[in-house]
Amino acid sequence: MVTGTFGRRIWKNRRRALRLDGSSEGVVESAIRRDPEAIRALWREHRGWVAGVLLAHKSSEVDLEDLLQEVALTVVRRIHEVQDAGAIRGWLRTVALNAARADGRRRSRRRRLDGAYRGVHPVASGGVDDAREEAVRLLELTRLLDEKYREPLILRCVRGMSYRQIGEAMGLPETTVETRIARGRRMLRELFARQERRAQAGEDRS
Amino acid sequence: MIDRDVLITRVIDGEASAEDWSALHAIAREDPEIWSDLATAQQDAAELCAMVRELGACSERVEAPIVEHAAQGLHVRLRRAAMWGGWLAAAAMALSWGMRVPGVGSQSAGLIPMSEAKERVLPELSPEEAFRVYITNGARSGRVVAIDPDLEVISARPSEDGESFEVLFVRRIVERADIELYRLGQDELGNIVRLPVDELPVAEPSF
Image: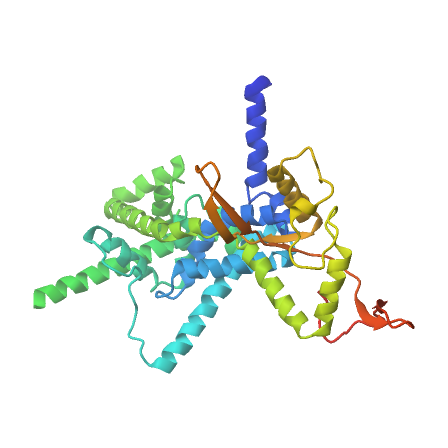
């Protein structure tokens, strides 16, 4: 048994963790009842992987932070509509998907009106140094994957996101998530190799 | 037999069991290229994850916009209320009659200097503590809806000791209240009196 100052500190830290951990059901339920502190804690807990969902589905030229702010506002406005605290990941993913798709539709309408769209834009604007070039290319290549492979692949990169948590968000069994990540990685590897071969062939010709 | 891609993925994600490793070695005896595929996949995953984390780092800056949402909601409600014209004036009047600050006499002419307050509320608390109690309890009861983080500075001047500045500012707090609406009318002597409103308008949502 832990007693004394040390024990109190542990208990205090545990209480703090319980209070601030946005994934615990109590926090989710308080957030649904529109408790501002719970909404803040919930958002902080989940915003990292929500950014991953947006990254997987947003059009390449849109600013991730802008889109994330839009999602945060929707969460504040509509969190009370969540019926089941256990389904919070699925709900957050739906909100993120809707935001990314609505933005995509707006942009595609604008492009049709402008007639100015000229293909895929770079992910990061400004100068990309050589060390990051390959990583940028890889991320661009994920856009060529079917989104059912792209999303779990990107979510797996978000720190701490397990197969189970990805499955909860996407409404899929863990084994399916694992298989999709495995397939996605192989396809990405093949796409990259194909691109390399093409670039090599182009250099040889010139 | 476990799928080749799944085995590679388990190794990359640190999820491979002893059984998986045995299966991997067994495949490698027939197909040594699996080691090179594993190395490439590992490098791709590391680079992709670094990129995703770099781009996703902006999420740390995005907070749940609770205050903005409340203020936005209030703005919309006030705009709707403004369409009522006289109703808004009546509501404002009901508020001023019904929600006087304890200890402050008249509220008829602009700002009331707090030096006119006749009694102190919560005398055992400092203003900061009392303010915190007001905000916490107000938020809990639903009375306090939002605080505008931007303080509006009215004036600033050096303090008497010359070591700091004295700043007068307005802090805006959005509150919610349930009020009874009255309309103004006249009694038989011609005095202006408050008369209860029999029917509330139904075309607009209540606020």
